[in-house]
Image (tube, rainbow, N blue to C red; front, side, top):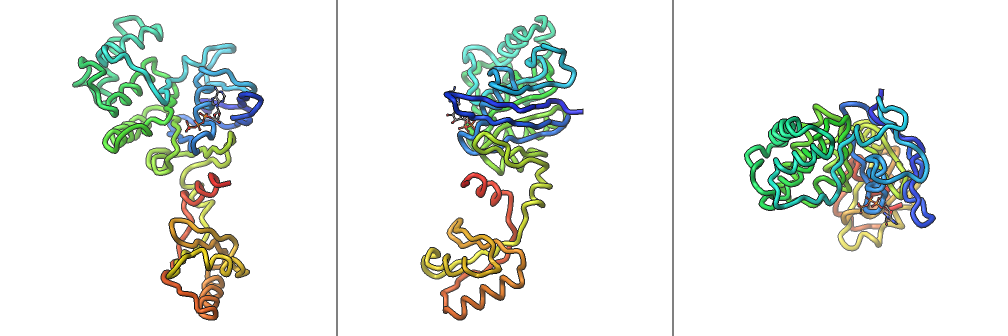
Amino acid sequence: MSVIKVNELTKTFDKKDVVKALNFELNPGKCVALLGPNGAGKTTTLRMLSGLLNPSRGSVTFEGMKENGDIREHIGYLPQYPVFHNWMSGKEFLIYVGQLANLPKKQASDQANSLLKRVGIADAGNRRIGKYSGGMKQRLGIAQAMIHKPNLIILDEPVSSLDPIGRREVLNLMEELKEQTTILFSTHILSDAEEVSDDLLLMHQGEIVESGSIESLRTKHQTAKINLTFGDSNDNYLSSLKSIPSVNESLIERNEIQLLVDDIDQARKDILLKVSQENLPLTKFEISRTSLEDLFMKVVKN
Ligand SMILES: Nc1ncnc2c1ncn2[C@@H]1O[C@H](COP(=O)(O)OP(=O)(O)OP(=O)(O)O)[C@@H](O)[C@H]1O
């Protein structure tokens, strides 16, 4: 049984579909990254899932949701740019948010204390939010998303505005929380997605172009790759190497020529023959495999 089911979810702004007929389900207890470059449509998607933006078409349903029920009861949401009342203490803020979510004051207060502990800022609970670091504010933001014990928490770019220390704090917290709840978070940084998520939804120009577990995507997209560099400009040699029949694809990335091949032995022979016949000034020859980063870069460049 899935926690959430998205069916043909579409958003049109100014006659342009910025989110295009998405279909996916999230399974309980998973941490899922919605990964895509700027402008891919991540925030628009998450806002529709959170009930903050009406879809132009399609639907979002939660397990156990009554017909015409309010999806906000089932999810907790941390926006990309959360706004806090800096004059409040962290604890006061959580009690206030709890009461907005219809919790009685005593229950809101108990829940605030337990969440402050859970996100690791119990010592700062009575301090004004204005004095919190970026990482502490994000942790408070995650606590507020969990105040009504939702089935799913949705975090929009939870680490992108943080310095390395804050980033580490929040990624560690997400690692802990994913043991207890389902998490969907957006990011444009592949390594953050790889670090904490089980599954990936790769989004580009309003569409989910790849999805699955990190491991399955890694395996599915792994092909042999030969990386080459030359003494002077790599550009001068690309067209010559492209013409080798055993080379499927070629590109220049991170200051090296990368050739994607199926038959590594044949390609090695062909390339070295060409280098020798044309006396090309080869300085590096390395056999490797494509990574998720290669997949991400390929999708993003199209
Ligand atoms: N209210 C709006 N009116 C018109 N266009 C919008 C609106 N909100 C978003 N867009 C457009 O929709 C597209 C997707 O934007 P969205 O913010 O969802 O992308 P994103 O993947 O979250 O990007 P980022 O990582 O930069 O936040 C963009 O082209 C954006 O300009």
